[in-house]
Image (cartoon, rainbow, N blue to C red; front, side, top):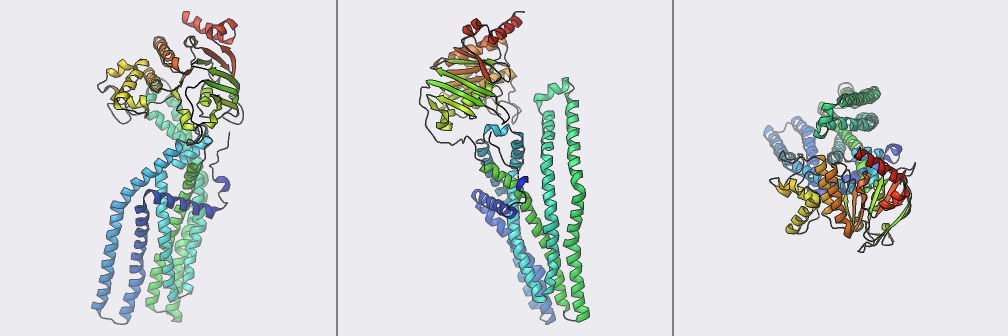
Amino acid sequence: MPKIRMSLEADMKENFLYRTVSSCKFVLNTAWTISKKRVLLEFLYWIFMYVDWLLVSCVLIRFILDLAMKRVAFEKMMLYVGSVVALEALLELFSLFFDVYVKPITDVELYDGVNKMLYDKACQVDLRCFEDSDFYNEYMMAVSQAHVKLSDMLQGVCQVVARFAAMIAAAVIIWQIDHYAVLFAAFPIVGNFVFYGILNGRIFRMEKENIVFQRMADYVNRTLHLGEYAKEIRMTNVFRLLKKQYDGVVASIQKVIARYSLGNIILFCMFQYFIFLLPQEGAVLYSGYRVSVTGTMVFAEMAVILTVMNENTWILNEFVDAVMVIVKNGLYIEQTRHFLEYVPAIPEDQEGLMPELPIRTVEFEHVSFGYKEDGYVLKDIYFKIEGNQSVALAGYNGAGKSTLVKLLMRLYDPAEGRILVNGIDIREYQVKAYRNLFATAFQNGKIFADTVEENVLMGQHTTPEEDKRRVWQALKLADISEEIESRALREKTILTREFSKEGAVLSGGQNQKILAARAFAKDSPVAVFDEPSSALDPLAEYHLFKNIKEYGKDRILFFISHRLSSVRDADIVFYMKNGRIRERGSHRELMEQNGEYASLYRLQAENYLS
């Protein structure tokens, strides 16, 4: 299994500046692609904000003091002030326009654009990734509120540019008055970049350590809130177990926070000391000395230096805050970028040969496979199916039956051996076209919060009349047409109450019939039914398998069942154990062999007869 590398801890300190700049570039490119208006107006918003600050805190104050010292007429002074106030009013109108109108609308655009990118990628990521807990932790960290991180980082980039320009302007103003006074601006830089940078790195590591515990807490919350667990919670003592798990998770989160807290407090104190006390008090003492002792600075210049130094301290603090926002969110954005740049082992858009119909042969050539590198789940599987044969996979749980059909559908690739369809390695076929050969009903398939029609057709529409015909034909084969027909909205009935309180909540067996109808509605040359009757009663199971057999007579049919009475009519039965096909043949042939299959069949038959 290829190692999935999304963790950033190993190279946190390697090429840090390059990775941060790359994340900024990714954010700007992504935001520009989604909403050019947002990027342009965000930049203008922050630039205008500091133009306003420069006009009032720096330029206007010095200008008025100069006019006052030169005893310029008050009317002329008011004319200048009025001009600045008018300009400020225009800038404030733009700020309101951005905050009230532009930002909310473009936030929705960013949300929509980013999530569509993530959805598209999630559909392409190899299935094995979602069965890897490390990957899933990283995936959850990457996609959780990705649009918020993108918006925050875009704002941070714009703030950094605007605040850097404002700091340069402030430094020029101070430099014109006194060259040495500029040095007091260095203390906030040390406080912010050194101490606050270390602090943010620790906070990120703390949050990363807590994400696995947060997932566990979310699981407990979800379990207690969802109706599907309500009966077990009320009829058993599982609530105590869940509460114990939750208490343990909370304690673990608190333990992680406590481990980081002392160091974080010390770093924050040093940060406050360097950004406020040293620069501001130092500037007061220095300029006061120049005015009162040496007489080399006038009071107006002292007032400007102290005003600008005070404002510049806050701007520098905000500048570094913006940098830290970029750094912190950049770590999340980098994981999002890695997720979006992840190259799957089986690309969904892989080009290749188009499968030719009819499907004449399906062949496994000594196929072995393992989900992890430490062992195989399937070992040396070989067989060849010819024509429209029905194949039953039988055996105990964990024998590898479901894994075999996953390999057949190319949800995974074998570690060893080949799978051939019509004599061609399935890896040479176009992925989407190849997978479209299969009609499937998975044991753990899901019902979507949509209409019965959409749950059956799964987006494969033709004409409204043909769609309706296919839906009802499939529902009849699945033996659930009468139930749906009794509903007021018939095939337009919404399933689940996720979004509608009038939604239909079906039983487990009825849901399983909808899943079977999903396969019946698809006219594919190969059909796969993975435990399609596990929630059905014996009579319903009998009717379902009878219809599956009828449906499969013109196609290759694979089905999995623990109840061996359901596999009697299959053309070929593969009895699997420990990842191998131990016995193969028709039901009659396997009974005559009197092996493990025959023993298991008789055992089940005795249970029914008794």
